[in-house]
Every structure is written in structure tokens, then in C-alpha cells.
Length: 152
Image (cartoon, rainbow, N blue to C red; front, side, top):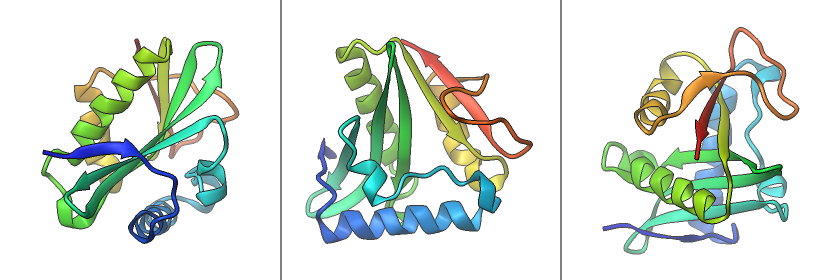
């Protein structure tokens, strides 16, 4: 079973997985459509990051950014390539949803891209009840990005 715990972003495995996440977002998205948070963005006070550990190995990361007014945003979900299709993302998403509910969040949203690189994540989000909707926060809609929301 996985151990999901808050991550302070100081560990080598976490930084490497975050770098992989950012490079993947840049490789699969138009330059003006990459909204993934870098290390400085993930260390802001309104963001909580969790790591999914399988023993001593980091299997995935994900974050919750509180937006205010009962809303929060899912950020930086990434499973390490060595752990794909083993339930890492599902366990982490369930954890973040439960934590958002515990914090009194009533609307959980996310922004993501389009195309084959994003299809597995989109399938997971939709399986958990996320539905396409309007842009939120500072996002501007484009032909590439899409916005999903889950009422809690």
C-alpha cells in the first residue's frame, strides 16, 4: 500500500519528479498554455503538496492550491513513469479530494490540456466525478486547455 504524506519539496526524488512533470508539460503543451507550478509556486502558503511513497521510492506527487471562497485547485499531479497504472494517481486524487472536503472546500477545479498525453489523467478525473466547465481564477480559455470541476 502507498504512504501519502505532505512533501516539503526538499528531497531529491521530489525535485526530480517535479522537473519531469514540468518538462512533460512543456513538451506536450503550447508555450502559452503551460500553467504548471514550478518549485517557487508549489512552496507558496496556499499550496499543499503530497508525495505518494512506495517504501523508499517516490511514486507520485500532487498538490492542492486554495483559491478562497470555498474553492481550490488541483495542481501538479504526476506519477513517476516506473509506477504508472498501479493506482498511484487514483490513491492520491482520492486523498486530495478527502482533504479538500475536510478543509471545507466546496468546489475543486483543475486546468489541463488536450491530446493523447492528457487522456489518462482526464479519464481518471472524469471517473472521480469531475466535469468540464468554465475557466476559473486567472485562466483564459483556449483551443488547447480545458477546465474540470468537482462539487464537494
